[in-house]
Picture 1 (tube, rainbow, N blue to C red):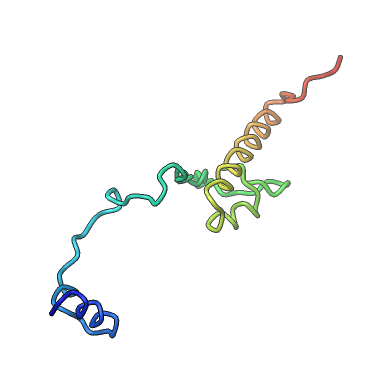
Picture 2 (cartoon, rainbow, N blue to C red; picture 1 turned 180 degrees about the vertical axis):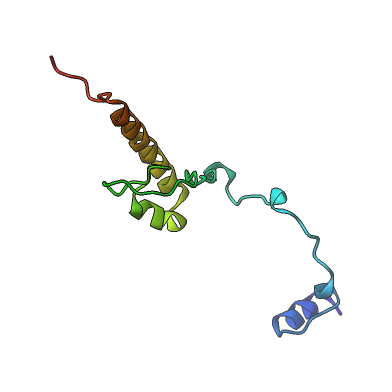
Length: 108
């Protein structure tokens, strides 16, 4: 069967011998992104398994709000990175308030 007939046969749903050859298996490390310069690193969840919301609705373990926790899986990596940044700021603020420190400088 010549090349043109094989293409026609495949387009009609008929499998040829070439179509039945096994495809080499590759693991995820072999994957090549379509545009490597635009690939963002994956953002890990800041969850530390201390899941308790304070009176402001912020988790005392990771510093995320209830809405941020609920929406984590549907967020882009850029959104997740921003949430991690905000959560870290909240945790530092909670820690400072627990110690009685003031994060805002006085104008005096």
